[in-house]
Length: 300
Image (cartoon, rainbow, N blue to C red; front, side, top):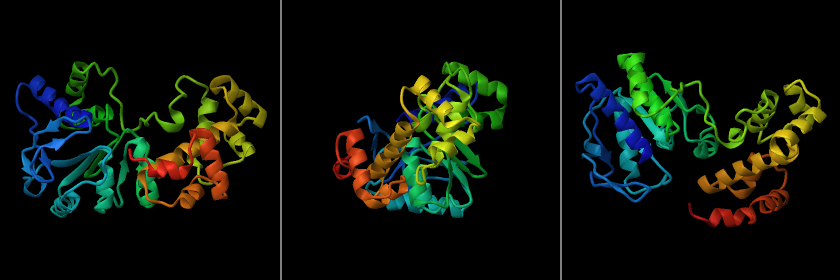
């Protein structure tokens, strides 16, 4: 619901500041009935997705539930819109549906960091970045949350100019308009704000090589440091060793894949750099207090 409201209200404020209706929007669900948001609040809709009139951009807004009744109707509507040449967008985890419909080929996209590992694993040929939003020709994707505001401020900027975009941002106490160059602060980078640039370089290298972990020497060389200097950086800023931090990143990625994909536990172990199922299971239990098989049985 946050992503949906952030999108609509950003446009609403733009209209108010312009003193005229520049933007209009409509909503649709799989069957035209109210859609229940993840917070339990029903959202009234205007149309069923199969009867939705043409719009400049059709956005799909999706939360945690990637499987739902009427999904095939939504996929069909997205493909139909693409065949007619319309622009398509996705908020939060909505990019999963665009990918499943085959509509992100040769397009750059992004998605909420919790879903990115699964999307990349399922669709390795898709260029899915870690940016807060991406606009690639007629595809608009965004990580959801407050990033939705930034995406729609960029749409407003392109349509009506920077001054109005900043006025709209001020209405939301949004003190800095982020751009498509801004990355999501999640996963590996969640605790690095204000810390050493050398440390950030090493952690980003770790995050980019989870399936084939780099050696301590390789990581150090990326930051023009010695192995000992890297160890001191981690202990000073993060209170742990590089090896333990790297292991946690790999296991956190494994947990995302367990929760969001149907990959076998062995495939997930291999995708996160473990040579054996037993070592993976042992490491997973040590960090999270339960085996990977139990994680797989849990519904989120």
